[in-house]
Image (cartoon, rainbow, N blue to C red):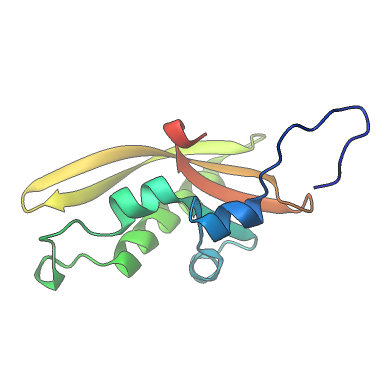
Length: 129
């Protein structure tokens, strides 16, 4: 990011650094297949806690990273299409966490500036904001 001469920057953590560190997971290619046209990331919290199927949910339960990510991105797209005059929307996603047990999360899709002030989408939990 470009330093602002009116501010004394104490610490800066770029989007690229967050992706390299695994704090954010780049899902731009998968998001393009759903219909998004901008750089898209999902927080590591959602990815590792929910997108990656928990142990014990093997293929016989129809759970995969690809399928779970597709569900999140599709629901984010539906929510974004309903949004008017806002840079963020919330949407709910159900995840199978164990045979017979699901968990519903409320996710946030936020469009904001990237490292070079280009529009970028971040999908996160409220605790990640």
